[in-house]
Image (cartoon, rainbow, N blue to C red):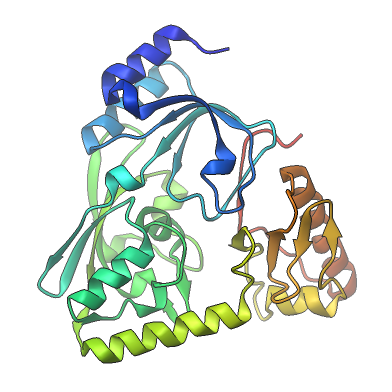
Length: 305
């Protein structure tokens, strides 16, 4: 049940037009799955984010920072807390010579296009990653031999105590799908990346090449959260799943993609419960066949019990 006083306070912070109640999370994840968020907020600036987080902490309200929802599975029952979306309202990209200053809500694909327009090379690898700069910095997003840690100069974050910090690249402790941002629970506000001057046609050609590679190898025609499992050391999750005979394996509307077994897709109105059961079945079979533990790369939000 909604609390009118809490709702009114959120409206005072961000404006009524940016506060939504019982918002279907299926509209805000690339899986196209998920029940409603009790409160869904779209702040415009750092100060609004800071005030929202401060209020949530004062009221003991759970909150979750959302970008494009590209690596997220939300419970069918939804989320009984506050979703703070840093996305379209938080997506400014400024080019400063060979550096780019980017707000957390900017899509990585938009950053890649902006770099192309500016004749800057070094970000082509991220052009097909569906997430935002904020989420990418938290997880050290990467593809085709490139990672965000290769280009990050600094990241500005909001701490749990409401302090705004700017962390330099050598302070970020970035590894495979992790960073100090993730382990410390910081909220990314913006980042600066450093690229190199390049030839626009060469950059465009490389981006086109990677797009064709993704299209041919990944099930982009279906909703998904990208790679479902982390890469086990010394193995590839997709190959293990394929070798376990699970290509096309289906639970309800969720399926191990036939085109790439590392992806679980929403083939036919899948529920979160379908996806969770399928992931459990896959992990169990791979463990039994090969003795390898698959860990989810996708994040979970809400009650899955």
